[in-house]
Image (tube, rainbow, N blue to C red; front, side):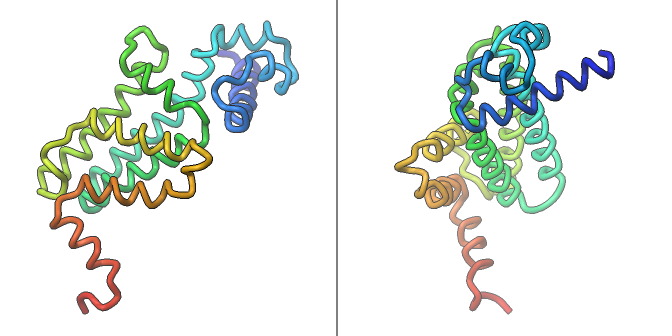
Amino acid sequence: MRADARKNRDHLLAVAGTAIGEEGVEVSLRDVARRADVGLATLLRHFPTREALLEALLRTSFDELTAKAGALEASGSPEGALVSWLRDCVAWTTEYRGAIALMAAAIEDTESALHASCVTLRAAGARLLARAQAAGRARSDIEGDDVFALVMALAWVGDQRSLAPRADHLFDVVAGAILTSAARSDAEGEHDPGAGG
């Protein structure tokens, strides 16, 4: 891709990211083009469908979350890595209103432009879960699909104006339910100023 075409594409993605952050994933392509000060035909040359635009925009974030999972696998406690990654995933979904519904659909639709990125992201979470389970720090009766579903459920809570104030508390409840009692006890001891010496 030529440098000027790459610059134009990057500009369109930046504008689309802002528009989706403000209006959600249903923002019109015409509105994105208007905000980017280009014609709709120019936008469609780079991104022929809304899904193609969303895939290009979201893939970068998915790749970052996948890379973060890889880094967490190699460092820190297994339960801390899992909870940290879950928190980052849920926080990311609040940046793009409506993205969670796209992810839920894309994970099942092999023809979706978002399918491969969602599968890779789910696999990253599954590896963190498996590591925590192998260390006896996470429940053995859940799997990667469950973790992905919990991210989507927590993201949905954060997307609801009336429930958003409870989102952090509910995240802690769900994260605590994923961990074994030993992992929860250790985490509580770390936060207890009177514990240890």
